[in-house]
Length: 432
Ligand code: UD1
Image (tube, rainbow, N blue to C red):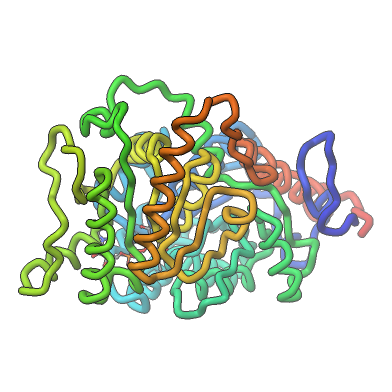
């Protein structure tokens, strides 16, 4: 078998070679109906964009039987259903309605309900994405039930165990049989952790598949136009990490720095429910954030920090795609801005997606509000300078390898080849 890193230019795919099966992968078995049942899990907002293109691709293959499970980790219309609507995903086959709660209760509830589900509808493979509580909960149930696990977006590491997502990533990878990676750093991290190379498949970024598709959808109206931002410069802000939004004083200092940035240009702030709730709670206190204004519809003035409900997927992409800069603590937004070539300031001490810095438009500015302010002012000045230059000399965005909108077919190819080569399925001996 070729080792990780074999590059096949004809197929533009870097894989760990034609997949043959290790012991656990080969547990995949033909079922009576000759179809391989692949149960994909979505739970939180960022899972939807990763699983949607994969589901569409799985449906194109008669020998595969896709089943979709929504854990209910996110349940507001704006955090969940709107993504199904806009990404053209049919309703899930199962909804576990696990809801919110402390991480241990939420994870346990998802495990309990998913465990019950696989007792009566047992899949041949469980596919989980990203690093949210739903990811580790379902991977852990599947692994203990001896159902093979595929992890989309494997190998990313911030090396910061204070992030709940980092713990979810490490544990999910340890449980997985197929580890699908988005960037070279992930391949290195998995190799350093001793993961067998025959489990690792460098396939690119499913989220970019969704983005590429979304860019092709013509839309007559959008939130950006409703805000009157067709031709005006503006910035976009997203914040939701517990470390950034769960402590009132720090949140207030962050928002004050951003309000200073908003003296230069309007800052559009579609707020995650966790963040909105914390801002609301702090607003009741004398020292609460005063700089923030709540958008109630209509055109935005020339400046100000404007909080609004979470944007739909298409509205959000349209907003960030035309922004002067994006300030964020999200993982996915670092990737989307890289693909779109939009300057991104990541308000965190680290990133698990270093390719967005080395090849993309991302700068990790740390969690110091004053440093954020200086970096943002610098970015605004650069943008003004660039605006004065001819569009011809402005470089096109550099895109990381395999972020090309074709990751879903690559993943399905790996799964189909693994399944077709399973000696138990075909009766053929597959040389190892
Ligand atoms: C989760 C993920 C995070 C991801 C983010 C995207 C984990 C550990 N974290 O964080 O990696 O970037 O989703 O949004 O899984 N809430 C609502 N409505 C909803 C969903 C949540 O009001 O539809 C509120 C609830 O009060 C909940 C809080 O938001 O307690 C946090 O939700 P939770 O799922 O625990 O984590 P996120 O902060 O969303």
